[in-house]
Length: 328
Image 1 (cartoon, rainbow, N blue to C red):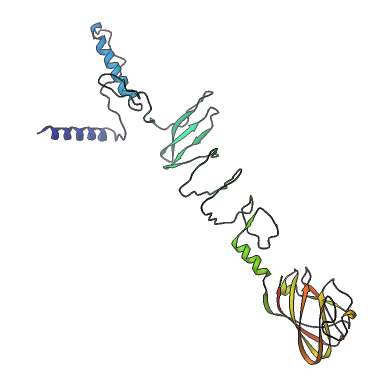
Image 2 (image 1 turned 90 degrees about the vertical axis):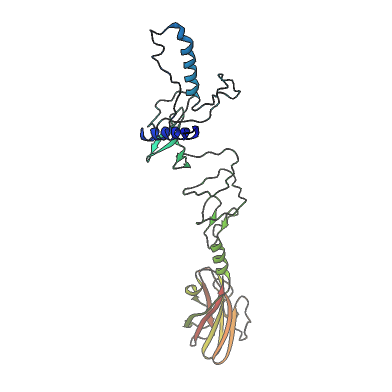
């Protein structure tokens, strides 16, 4: 068998010995070991130099597991010798115990069958740093400087920004935040805030509510309780309890007369408008009918309760009133 074949068999033998010897995942095989029983009391003093060399070799191998302690020939003379190459934890522990002042402890603890990294400060406050391959913090994450996040950041809880959050990309909220200058889901914009932004839905709802609403419904069949006297007509069931400019279609189901409509709380007494000529009054709209079952239209303002006032020159006529449309 050539030397290459022998080397392969040797390597395989070492791997099998490590595997079947205890399923060892990570182990260091030392050529020289520290042995407190050596030198023995009966050993010859002439062997002291051999024992000193053996101790140095064992210490070099032991330190070289986690530190950078290379041999240059028989010397440790590399300029970088002593630097840390890695930290290899022996096993998980439940707690590092008492921590002295001005000290801290980095250790691993078993979490759901996995060894996770933990830190305990001098006040013995413990935080978990890793979780199933991810970074983790079980307390507040404090970032004093500038941080660049190039991946996706998922926040399942609240994110508090002390001063200013500068975003150069897109913000894609799945819900609208209603505090701290976030998006407002406020269809009527009642807060009238100078430092808040409404959602797209609220913007559309606000504009739609103030655009012309074509109704052609809201039919009222009514007669006046008294001639030449204004009385209330509540349109809130159709236009809402708010101010609005309303277009009415008014049909007189009798022969002749004057119909007048105005905003409640404005204008003068009915007689100021009853001159027999359409549109003769100020602050109101009127219709002068000639003939039977005639239809006219008036444009009138409703007050904040959605109420107008109307009247007629006689109280024997019945009017059929229809809301054609309105805008708030």
